[in-house]
Amino acid sequence: MVILDVTVINVAVPVVGRDLSASLTAIQWITNGYTLVFAGTLLIGGALGDRLGARRVFCTGVVVFTVASAGCGLSQDTGTLVAARLVEGLGAALIVPASLALLREVIPSPASRSRAFGLWGSMAGVAASAGPLLGGLLVTAVGWRWVFFVNLPVGCACLLLTRRCVPASIRRPNRRMDWLAQCAVIALVGLLTAALNEAGRRGWTDPLILAGAGLCLLAAAAFVLRERLARTPVLPLTLLRSRALSGGAAIGMLFNFAFYGMLFTASLYFQHERGLTALRTGLALFPAVVMTMFASVLSGRLARRTGHRPLVVTGMLLGALGLTGWVAAGPDPAYQLLVVPMMAAGFGTSFALTGSTTTVMSAVADEYSSTASALFNTTRQVGSATGVALGGSLLAATASFTVGLRISMAFGAVAYLTAAVLALFCIPRKASGRAVH
Image (cartoon, rainbow, N blue to C red; front, side, top):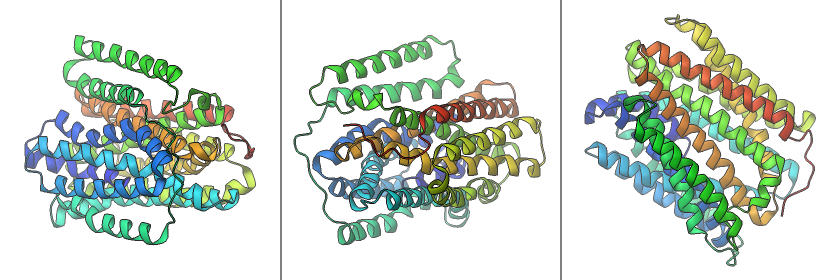
C-alpha cells in the first residue's frame, strides 16, 4: 500500500493537474509531498517502534495512512490534496520501519529471515509494477480519486490481519525521543526537496535556491552535532561506523533516485510528448516495473548460493545499462527501443533490493532493528524525492522536453554506477553474523 502510493500517482498526476488546474511545480508537490514527509519522519517512526513496540506503531500507521487516503480522494483543490498527501507520508513513516522490525522479531532464523526480506521486497515489486497500470485503469474507468480510495479496503484488511496474526512486540520505554534531531532531518529533507522542485522554475543560480542549498548543509551539520551530544540519539552515530549499514543505506538512496526519477519523467514524457492516455501510459511503463516482481524473489533464492554482493553489483550495472540505453536511443525513439532499457532498470533495482535490505537489517543488534529499517528507508525515500524533483526541474529548465528527459536519465545511470562501486566495498560476500550494538 505504501509503495503503491509512490508509483500509482505517476500516471494520475497529469489528470489531477488538469482537473485541479495545477502547475508543474504543484504536480511535483503532489508527488513529492508524500515522499518528503515519508522520508523526513522515518527515523522518528523507527525510534517509536523501538520504544512503543513495532506492532502498535505499525497499526497506528495503517490507521493514519488509511484516513489520509480518504482525505486525498475527497480533496477539491490542490492545497487540500497536498496536505492530505503529507499526512499519508506520516502514516507511511510509521508503517515501513515497523514492518521490517516485525519480520525480524517473528522470524529468528537468518536463512528464513533472508527469504522473508526477499518476500518483503517482492511485495514492494508487486506494488511498484501494479501502480502505473492500476493507476491508468482507475483514472480511465472511475476517475483519479479512486487512486486513493483503493487504499481504504486494503488498510482495513491490513489492520485486522495484523491484530489477529502478529504477536505483540517488546517495548523499550528507556528509548527517549530526540525531537531536535528529528526536526533537523525534516528540515534537511524539506529544504532539499523544495530547492530541487523550485530550481526548474527559478533557475539553479537563483538566490533562494542557493540559500536553500546552504540551509541544507546547516541542517545536516545540526543533525550530526545533536546526535553527538544527545544522551539517547535517534540515530546513534556509532551505528554508521558499520560499513554494511551506511553503505547499504547509500545504495538504497542511489537506486531509488534513479528508478523513481525514471518513472516520473517517463510518465510525463509518454503523456505530454506522445499524447498517451493515463491507461496507455500505465501499459507503456508496465514492462519496466513488472520485472521487479521476479527480480526480488530470484535474488532471495540466489543469495543463499552467491551471497548478496554479486547480486547487488549485477543489479546496479543492469540499471546503469538500462538508463544509458534510453539516453543513447535518441531524441525521438520508437517505443520498442525504450522497452528493454526500462526493463533492465526495473529488474536491476529490485534485484539489488533484497541484498541491500538484508545487509542493513543484519548489521545491527535487535534493539536497533526499527532504527536500522528507518535509516534504510529514509535514504531510499530521500533518493525518490530528489530523483522526482531533479527530473521535474530538468524538464522545466531545458529548452526541449526530450533533452531534459535524457539528461535526467543520464543522472540516473551515474547513480546506478556509483551504487555498484559502493556495493563492491560495503556489501559482505557472506553474512558475518556480527551486529553493531
